[in-house]
Length: 226
Ligand SMILES: *Cc1c(COP(=O)(O)O)cnc(C)c1O
Image 1 (cartoon, rainbow, N blue to C red):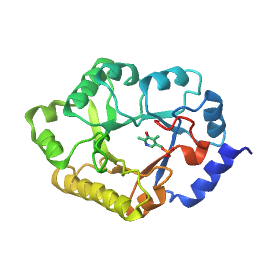
Image 2: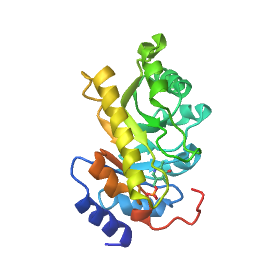
Image 3: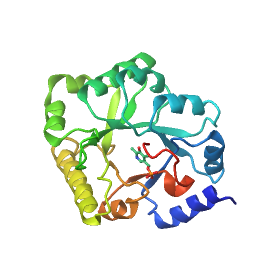
Image 4: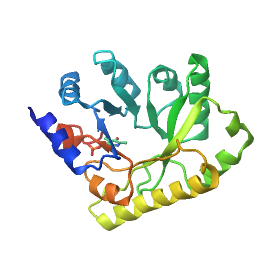
């Protein structure tokens, strides 16, 4: 067993069975992804459409691909035919584009609404007012080819655990509000995607259902801007 495989096996001991692990493969080679795949792992996440497309065809078909990074509207059409989950829906406009591309290929696309919970200004995402207005609007109910499965958020990159915990708590709070107000009878609305390599233990404690982990599996990335 190599490092990547033992990292995954060690992690799986720490992660409750009902919490999903998305192995984040940005800037990783096809060979590295294969190593993770051969440990039995099947759920992978990429940030960028271009990078995802260039790797996907070289890898097995039974991989469940997720997009976790900011998604441009003009790229949506390339991923809709095969993507399993889009974590990073951050505008109403983007959701509409996903819906219309999904109509074209006759499928329903699972989506998470990304909330802005960090203090950094660079992180994308909705606030609760924007989401409420979107859900209440007339055209929202017309979007038959998207399925809102839950929320996603990224905490501030900080060593302050208390701050990270509070940001995760705010995401869980938004989840509960939306669940109670609009998705009470929708069993598919149940995901909270939060937790990265540096903060996943806190995320689990606060109720994450999906962790997005890269460096703890594959080692440090060389490009610090990713
Ligand atoms: C890179 C990235 C991750 C994983 O980051 P690590 O710190 O390597 O675990 C998770 N989510 C998003 C949105 C990312 O861009």
